[in-house]
Each structure stands twice: as C-alpha cells, then as structure tokens.
Image (cartoon, rainbow, N blue to C red; front, side):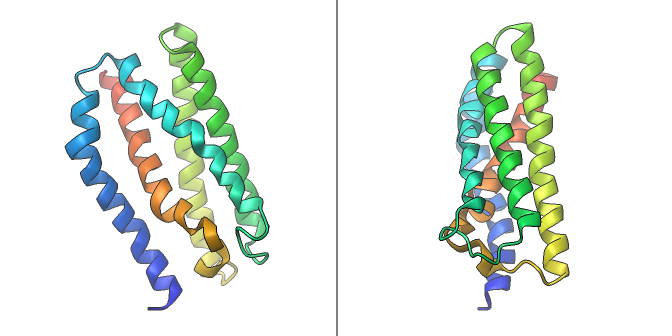
Amino acid sequence: MPPRFAFRLSVPFGLMAWGIVTALYIWPTLRGLSPADAIRPLLLLHSFRYLGLAFLVPGTVSPELPAAFARPAALGDLIAALLAVLALGTLGSPLGTSLVWVFNIWGSADLLYAFYNGARLVNDGKLLATHFGAAYFIPTFYVPLLLITHGLVFWLLVFG
C-alpha cells in the first residue's frame, strides 16, 4: 500500500477507534464526576502535547518535512500544553474555568489548523506521509484522541 493511502486511512481509523474507546470507557467514567473532576484527566492528557515538538527534531522527522507545517504544529502544541498545565493548576476557580476555555479553543483551533495546513501542503505536493518519520504516530494515533477529548471538554464546559 502506498504511504499516502496508509496515512489517509490511519487518521479516520484513529478517530473511529478512539471514538469507540471514549464511548465505552472514557465518557462513562467522566459523566458521573463534577465538571472540574471530569476535566482534570483531560487536561493531564493534553499536558503531553509538548510531543508536537518532535516535528522540529531532525532524525525523528525527515529533513524534508516542510517548516510551513512543522513550526506551527510544534509551537501550537507547545502553547496548548502550557495552557493545559495552567488550567490544571487553577481548576475549580473562576480563573481556571476561563483558562480551560482558552486552552480548549486554542487547542482545538491548533489541531484543525494543522489538518488544514497539512492537507494544503499535501495537495501542493510539498508534504508526504514519509516526511513524518517516527512522528507518524502523532497525527494518526494521538491527534484523533486529542480532538475527541477537546469535544468532551467543550461538552463539560457547556453542559457540565
């Protein structure tokens, strides 16, 4: 199978698999908790978004990975991780609620922009699945989970 097809198949499979895990295990566990207690583990998960810095590490990714993709993805993830940690540290206070909103809006927009930017670069022939190297797991395994958990945080903030 050509790498571009494997990559394009992996992302929706990641969304499907994490959607099932969320429906069967994550949401049933969280829905009985207070909003702050339910959001806490989701913020902890997002505190690992520093992993996006892998897009800047030669040897982890191909030297041909376009900087137009790598830099915004890496820095956007790092900011999301910092916002998650700040929100986690203030959770349960009015400031914490505001920071959760800021984190969730920023983090969601960052992931959606990375998808848009990546698709644009793929269509221009500047980004190939092989450019991701060892960081291939980030958009195919980790990002689907992050997107789903952003949805959970929005749900908890609005309906919690």
